[in-house]
Image (cartoon, rainbow, N blue to C red):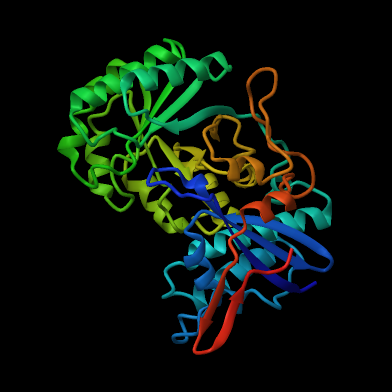
Length: 391
């Protein structure tokens, strides 16, 4: 069969706030081929990625992403990989291409899974999908008391692992940050997994990150996530030598397998966190998961938005039994909550299972798409390049 259409839908909350919450808008991808429909999601600014899908060719290595996708043969996983290579060859200088490809790649895996009647993890060669321990992922509150209250409420809901990130952390004094982490520990309790996400706030400043280690160690934090930007590998490696039991986590900023490989090999990570909606999709995320397992680094999904994105993020490491912890969004905006008809709920033991239905096992809700849809047109030189597609 051949790819007949690639449709992007720009969705947004009525008001987007200046906070570290990527669930406030979404870029939904629909691919049609051979009478089947696959859905995916890009973790990127919607309008920018739409532009990269349809932009006029700048030169031979800077073509619109759709030029490498539409009309392509799609019969199995090998075609998905081939299409991904074609996009990267033809859009080498289009720096948004990896994010745009990601949503398309996810949709292609979903479509092939539906065509063959098997879940995506089966297509990836995983014969048994192991349950994961979800960590509730949310922002630090503005006050330590707010963080303590949030942690206590999540523990009462049965979460044994909680990650606090962004917000005021790293932007004030080391004492204020220590109070936040201590509050998280008190709310979670002594036996839970406490995770901390600095959101790249220190860029590459090892000294500022070092000031936080004692408090993290004292509170028994499992990891310190993204103290630096993804490219600051020397800074990661230096801090990893001093962090002790508090392992470093990072990698969500990686746009392809090679970036993730460099972090695994040289940054001293204990955990590599990959977002399928950024790295180019499930294809590259699976390469990273397999490589991380060989190198003794634990693979963790990165996702903060919808359950469609959550399912996509779980597929690459579903078969890694010892890589048990997974990110689980609990503070998403209504857009992200309502977008999917299906949800990946925790079982009676508090664990998360990858859907075993064909494809990703999660379908968007058309009513929710219509509710949050942002009608968009892109016109260049009087020529219409993009208009919001019909549902």
